[in-house]
Length: 80
Image (cartoon, rainbow, N blue to C red):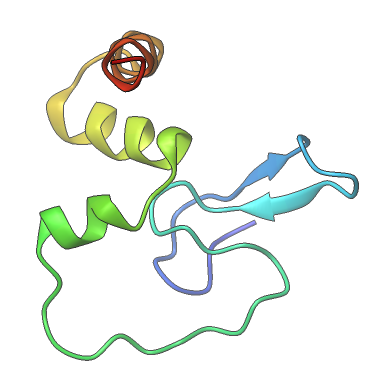
């Protein structure tokens, strides 16, 4: 299924009571309304709005790194 906001593939998020399709690139969750973003959004502002899984996917795609390595690094940084 394609995301209605950014047109990337959505992934089923099974960590919820009811599994929903979710886009890890823009944070859209199935069933939410699509808000039209006005103006430019910087990468930093975009990263601040993501959870750890979305941030890891966003960084892995941009840096060409393994998503699991980024998650381990982020979790180690959050422990401090």
